[in-house]
Every structure is written in structure tokens, then in C-alpha cells.
Amino acid sequence: MTSILEVKNLSKSFRGRRDWPWSPKSVALEPTSFTLAAGETLAIMGETGSGKSTLAKLVAGVDNPTSGDIYLNGQKLYDANTKQRCQNIRMIFQDSEKSLNSQRTIGQQLEEPLIFNTRQTAQERQNTVKQTLRKVGLLAEHYEFYPHMLSTGQKQRVAIARAISLEPQIIVADEALVALDPSVRAQIINLMLDLQQDMGISYIFVTHSPQIVKHIADKILILYRGKMITFEKTEHLLNKPQQPYVEQLLHEHL
Amino acid sequence: MAQHDLYYQDRNPSPLQLVWYSFRERTAAMIALWFLIILLVVTLASYLLAPYDPVQQFSDALSLPPSWTADGNMAFLFGTDDLGRDMLSRLLIGAAYSFALPLVIVIVASSFGIFTGAIAGIDRNAKYRLFGQVFDRVLTIPSFLLALVIIAILGPGLGNAIIAITLSLIPQFVYVTRNAVQSEWKKDYVTASRLNGCSDTYLMYRVIFPNITPAMVMQFTVALSVAIMDIAALSFLGLGVQAPTPEWGSMLARSLDEVYLSPWSMVLPGLALFITITAINIVGDSLRRAIKQRMDG
Image (cartoon, rainbow over all chains, first blue to last red):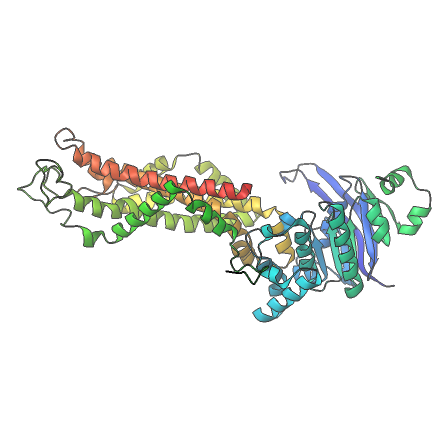
């Protein structure tokens, strides 16, 4: 399988709250490289503060990296070119409630990516949105709803609908399943796996639940204090004895 | 009637509409709001409603008490002042200076201030950060003092008072908008919209703006009562509206000399100011409570 995403020496360092030139730098992510093939699922694991969210945000384009490059299908992604990135890499946030604009209807919000990335007319956009809503197990009527009228699970489905409406190649999910209760979580995982089969999407999951990782991930990337310590196929990691930190991450909550 | 369509709701009130529903249930707030609406209509029609010219002097009716007292005359409903000018006409025309003018001032100041504040909030250039710091310092000066300083430079007069009050109100709008935009900017839904590829203008007007409307509306009501007070205070000090023009503040100042002889000439404009500002504050406060109630669920 050829890789669609190639991350080369991506790193990020922050200065303190006040961004003076002389304030000390703290490194959130040391140079990290990995590749992702079409239709593959990558899980990024690590303890709190290990830089896993930072890595996800860099790939999704929320933050700009301090150094390093991202290649998509062999093409370099530039920080300034949001169009190129957002058509192919989409992000699902940890808290679906906060990631939806409470003052606008679901339909208006789902049309947003279509307005800026396609040449569809208003009518076509509305049809696309309604189709997408059905794809994620909602009704076309939800077009008129405001976020506060939906349950948490439904909001997460809306967030997924927003991510898939441009038919991207990669979806980055930053702890997207944490806030859900177990049954809804199972539904959402199944939905995402179905969509992966139908549309050939690659996922990058940031999570710390070993059960989910074992269930869905093809590869696992483990970070420790901003440093990548393992990047391997799931079976390899699970069947080989590992260093204590990795063991602990993979066998938590069992 | 049987409801055939069980699932689909025809009316999906938006969060802003829900705030209005909550506001509508408050009696005091609705009375105050209706008072302000009626006041606005009366103000706009004041030149038609006023029975006399506000500067016309009736030499045969000097310091005439209001019509409901024993010495009153129905021809002068609220009586006359010491120069024989009809109080009702003066109050009505005065509303244009004391209520409509501050309203216009606040609209101008808010549109400029909100626009500037939005740019300052969205742009992270050092230039705008410096701009923000400067405005933060300007804000430590009370707006009335700021207006006085500007008057001291420009000289007294209605036009200068308008300029002074407008300029002194703008920093507050800039500050409130900038802070609101900056705090919204960090939230996930804005990031999500940014990742949708939205342009900055779209982000500002369609994404962030609906979420900061409550803060803007509240700042608007606060600024309105401040503007009314400021223009009345400036006129009272003789720095704003000049002598024959009937402004509530200048009417108060004029009545100081004969407050024991004709108390109505002081009470009536004072009451007008008091009720108007109270109504604005009630509307603003109820709005804040309605929004808070809405946000708490």
C-alpha cells in the first residue's frame, strides 16, 4: 500500500503565555515522522501532556508546526493554504458540543465547508447536507435544528457529518470518543468504521483507551513527553514484550 | 387538533429567540421596553406633537403652575417657566436632544467601536496588540472626564459635546468587542469553522458575531444610559447644549435659580431623565438576566 500521508520531522515548541522573544521555549513535540496509507487507521497514544493532541492539531492544521513538513499524496502542505488541507484532512473535536456553533442551525453549519470548498449552488448544498445527514444516521429534518436540541450522540454524528461532507482522505479525531457513554461510543465507532469501508477514509485517532485501539487501529504511534517512542503495527506491539511505559498504556483499564 | 406531523417541528426557535421569550415574560422589562418605544415615537414626532414653539415666550403666563393645580391653565398642560415658555413643548422637543441624540451617538460609537474591536480581536499583529494596550489605558479614565477633556480642547457647544461623547464611548465598545472576540476565538467551534476554510469576514459576521450579540446588546444599553447622563451633565454645566435650546439637563440648570418659586420647572425635566434612564437600565438588566437564564439552561 502506498502512503497518502507522510509526516517528516514535524515538531512544535511553544513560548509561554506572553510570546516575547526572550521567554523560554518549551517543546511540545520533538521531530516526529510517520506515514499513513489509504484506508488505514492510526492510533496516537500517550499519557496526558505527551503531545498527542499537539501532533493531531498539527496534522489537521489547527496550529502551524515549528519545523517539519507534511506531504499529502506526495504534495507538500503549506500552512497558509487552508483550502488544500481542509478538502483532504478533516478534524473531529473532543467535545462535539463545543465544536458546534450554538447560534446556528445544523444545516447552516454543515453548509459552511461546501460554501468555501465547492462550487455548488444553494439548492445543491442543501441536498448534499441532507444526504450527509442520512449517511451518519440522522434525518434530513435535522437540517433545521439547533445544536441544543440534539443529544450528545447526535451532536457527535453532526460533527462526523461535517468531517465527511467534503469526502476527505484523512479524518483526525482528537479524543472524539471520550465524552460519550459506552453504548453511544460503540455506535459512533461502528458508524466511523462503516464510513471508512464505504469511502476509504484513513483515520488518525488520538485516544488513551486501549480497548478501542485494539479494536480499530492498524498502527499505533506512542508518544512520551513529546518524543515518539514506538510506531508499529498493532499486532506487533501487542504480541511482543514492550518497555514498561508502553505496556502500561496498552493494558490500562483491563 | 390532532398533530399529524409528530416529529417535525415547524417552529425551531433560535437561541436568540429563546432569550426574547424569556425577556417577554418579565413584566417590568416589558413595561420599560414599551416606555422606551413610546418615548422614541414621541421624540420622533415631537415637532408635530408640541403645542407651541419651545422658545416662544408668553408674557401673560410667566411661571404658570401645571394645569392640575388650582392656578393652572389647560392651555399650558405642564405649566410655563420663568420666561413664560411652555414646559410641555420644551420637554417634548428636549427629548430629541436628551434621548434621540444620545441614541444616535451610541449607534455611531458602537458601529465604529465594534468594527475596530472586531479587527483588533481577530488580528494578532503587534500593531493591533499595541492598539489594544492603548485603549485599555484610556478606559481607566471615566468617560465623562474624557468628554470634559475633549470639550476643554474643542470648546463648549452642542457639536463639540456630540463629538466628545462619541469619542469617549468608543473605547468601551472596542474593549468589550475585542475581549469577546478573543475569548470566542479560542473556542472549538471557531477552530472548526476555520478548518472549514472560512474567510475571516465570514468567520467574523456569521460564526463569531451571533455568539457575542448578548455582550454587544448589553454594552449598548449601558452606553446609552451613560450617553444620556453625559449630555445632560454637560448641558447642566453649560458646556453642551446652549441657552434657548430646550435640553433636559440645561432646563435643570436654568431652574436652579427659581426652584422654590416654580418647583415644577425642575421636577419635570428631572423626572423625565430619571424615568428614561431607569427604563434603559431595567431593559439592560433584564436582558442580562434573560441571557444568563438561557445559558444556564
